[in-house]
Amino acid sequence: MRLRQLTVACFLLGVLCVPAHAEGRDIGRDTLPANDGWAAEGAGTTGGAAADDAHVFTVTDRAGLVRALDGGSDTPKIIKIAGTIDANTDDGDRLDCAAYATGGYALKKYLAAYDPRTWGPAKPSGPQEEARQTSAARQAERIVLPVGSNTTLVGLGDSALLKGASLHIKNADNVIVRNLDLRDAYDCFPVWQSSPKLSAPLEQGDTPNGGLGDWKTAYDNIWLTGATHVWVDHVTLSDKGHPDADEPTHFARNYLRHDGLLDITGGSDLVTVSWSRFAGHDKAMLIGNGDTATGDRGRLRVTLHHNAFESVVQRAPRVRFGQVHVYNNRYDIPGDDYRYSLGVSTESRIYAENNAFHAPGHVEVADLVKSWNGSALHQSGTLFNGFPVDLLSRYNAYNSGSERDLTADVGWTPTLHTRIDSAREAGRAVARGAGAGRIP
Ligand code: CA
Image (cartoon, rainbow, N blue to C red):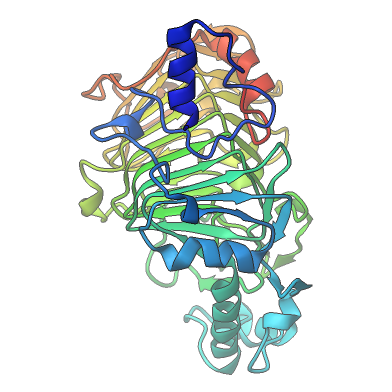
């Protein structure tokens, strides 16, 4: 008898049953509650709940996880991760960056070959760049894990950890990822991108540098492309173990090792991200990755609620095109290197309500929002260090310094949501309850 049937039977008989939140209960067949954000649209999100018993797996190492993911097949499946799995392993042996390097690649030689002072503004090419690409492909083959349709991926207990992996939910529908600590999607082989001044312009705001160029990294902890009906809940996403702040600079730019924590791109749609922790990272969440990606128009509908953004430098989130409902989130803004939280980009329609910001004294309300080609932002119920503020106020916020005002009319009102708390209540609840290992 399935748990749900049992629960109903107990209810009908008036019997006192084991409560659903009992320690160690099986969350594998849980489905997204009705109305819980954009992922509840239409058929909703059930992940692998329809899996037969042969497709319920408990995995303890990379090989087992890869077998269970089945190359991203759409067979209904429930995959439970027990303990720690390190993606950078082969038969249990740890692979370091040197193990992937091939074709004579060496960072020292790479830096010598493409020093902008001698190489100039051209895109890197030649033996070291070719060796970098081949080496990077070897790492990608090991750490990029495709997640197919009708899949639930959950951590068992309160300490399941997936290290070094990039979960790629690509052209898949109906996926649940819950109760998992996803850590340190570390790129061994960042690529040098040549100067925005001297070649094709990069996005305004992405390269506030001296015009030399920038390092580009490949991996997000979770990356959605062309994915629909995805529920990410009670996950913890961070660089833990390898903070980018500890990386050196090369060519006068930080040699970053991580890209996004959770990027939603390529026409993805109908996503709910709830009760998750985004911690200690630069670019946390990109929704829509190009101003010219007009195929994203009408898509990229995402709900973010009861998430914690802790020491996130920027993109919490940055949005293009999408209708994104951002409610009841908590922001703990870092003391150093903070850039902004809500990024309002091309045709974005962010509806932000009852979010709580906690910031050091030198951060101003005006710093919380940044716009590139944005035109509108709805905000209400915002708290800033306990005080109610208006992110759009002409006097204290974004509009005071902008060349182009943001209007408050985003042209839609969210209807798919569960209870919306005050920012104060939400801030406390999120501090207690967001992240892996905290499903009530
Ligand atoms: Ca990315």
